[in-house]
Length: 632
View (cartoon, rainbow, N blue to C red):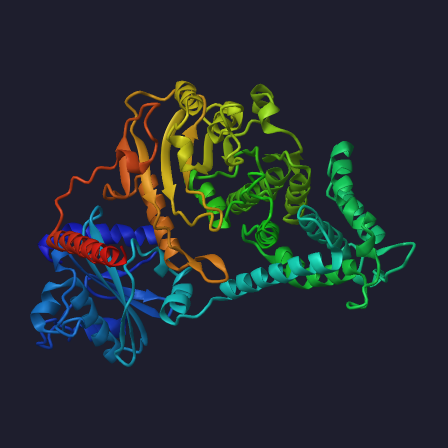
């Protein structure tokens, strides 16, 4: 182990340990690999040669070569290929990794090798993976921040998506779900003439009724289009039974739900046989939902909020009123990230006071159930540790149905106006974690209580002492653009502590046109004047917008998320373009862009690019000026 690389070697070891990967340093416990390395000298002498780390993950062989100097990361030849000359192989990380990868694929049985060139340190570094197969083909993959996506849990997905360029089973399933959502929306419109708010009610009501199939009290064959005992009556009765079975209480709550589901029983067109379908629209919807949604939700163990996804699809295709109502459904990767950022424990009590379709509560439930130590704790999580509030009656109905479908045991949701709830009464729930995506763009000088930051303060006031609040809100909420918002920020710091703010990608809510951030607070602890908050730039989150699909996760999203968590929990350092730590004032803009100042000396490439951009700008000005002179 070269002396100048010692610190880098130790840092790489820590990264591997964090990712749950065990590789051998300076040799290999796999006999055939160790034998092959006895002739792997990078100088081509046929003597022994060892990369920094090597070992197997499943049927992949991982090889790591590192350098402490970032300038020694990679060298390309005149054809823009990785240079294989001896000096390049010995002096550069990527070139050395490529050399070892080729040698091992020719001298072992391994046919899938991922070699890594690593340079720098924990704050400034580059990690470049190379995929090498039995034909000595080398594919340079995009840089990563860690080795997390190469552990046993993730490496097959990485190989499928990034090396083969194919969709995983989960991607295929998600694509099919989105396709079905579009088709179902059109069917609800064409055969049921339903309003926007009625469509998700029909879907969630049918899902509840389908749960009674397992109990023998309902089946699809019962839907025969009878004029007296209509299909709507049968589905409504099954919904009623399932709400009783789920022990939804008090009675007034169950009655509220049934009032919303009455659209299934009372809408005439849904209960009449359709000539095109040869059956009632309700039976057609029930059959389609059973095959395409119910089976997926019933057997999935992920925190995917499928019903929420359907609602989002319905609204997008209808041109919906979702934005005018301020309802913005939270993407599932954000609901899962919330659980990780607050390090959710199985004994936490979670409150979402603007729960929408209950995406946060579902994610929290699955996260806590995984960590629970026994069945008694799991039962208590389902029955007593998940609380939600929702103002809109139809959204409340969808959220309650979604929670029941996902097995919460007892849906502790209430149909109320959060801002009218007394914080002292909400504190009695003992919520240790508050998660929220409040209504957007509702506040004004005439009604400042509807500003997003007002919801944040009320949530903090409603939590138990030392409780954690994590919210996703527009970035503008933290700039204090109005006097009222500045006052809310000042009041928050007097009574609570801001831990940090994470700026998100502009595409997080793709199609909505709002730039958001995640803010994390500790409740009922006045903000110390000298406390340094964390401000993180997480715009590069590993997600991309795909045509006709929307926002999709690339394999690098897991790597980016893991890096974010490592930085947030102070497990690693990161450059200031990713994180800035700073004391704050109420009138500051609580965002990374406000505190960030690039004090690093730009390198030669940056200087050249800046000059190129400037000359291009000046050239375009001249061209445009000449065109305008010709026109006029």
